[in-house]
Length: 397
Image (cartoon, rainbow, N blue to C red; front, side):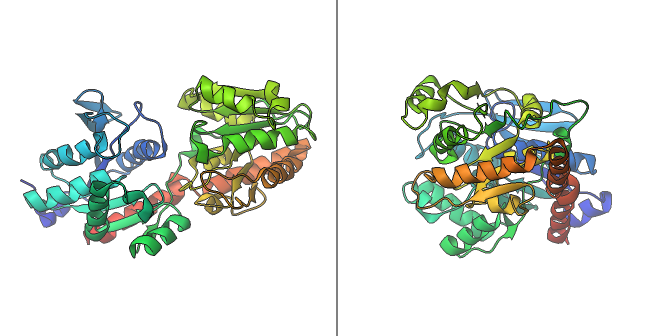
């Protein structure tokens, strides 16, 4: 049974915080999983008692850098939306949450947020529930999956705080669900991407264009980027395009045989998934990082690139404009009418060329690196982390 909030507050000045998400590193590596990892480390270093609830191939209790991970064995592993491992986690987590006294459960998906709210009701637990939506919530998504709609509706009604990661997501949540929320971008461990030592400087005559993301996911825009790259090659004949992320041979073949891409195929390099540790050097060696994704809730890779001193290009949609708010560090292009992905090849080409023009000399490169680094610092844990602590304080008082 949990202690009363009053008695807990007299025992410690910091709170007991659980961070929950269906998936976790190293088994899954996406924005939410990165957020979970970094948030757990930040809160622990700030003196909070932190634990993590997630799923893994096997059930286990694991210590990682002084943080306890309670990992539920993943079941119903399937791509089907009607019932999958996330739904299983939403039910399994309820009983687990009553085993440890907590002040705050910070949930990075509506599945674990539903579990936290149901457990609080069922077992009369005494903690606050923070739901942070890492995506862009739209009503249409839930039409085909009634159970998800049931979960989500309960969460936005019962959570003590509802957070979103961008202004675009905030507007959509209010428009589609009449739900008020607070914009709190996901902080980034920018120091992991700082330029340290004698990195290879990008060569203005041989610009290296970098894409980091799931190449197989159409909305990410790898196809339009390859087409724009073929146009960039007409100006920079020695330019190369490097795509780092999930890929398969079928997608590669389909991309490279397209008429508008074939002429540049020899200079398009698919790097595969790689490791998180390889990312800093990839960013540092690039002339520009491009993310032409629509419906992007935030765009962590863009902040990482800026932290490495590399300018960025993105589409004026979703959360990306929140990052490219200063034209000194990158360029935006309009998505134009689109369905699954942007088709604005001309707009993307112009944005890439415009950004490349800012790094044509050593002086320009060094100046841009400094500006990018300073801009990235606005999204660091030292800049944004205190806002999360302030939220916890408000909820507990």
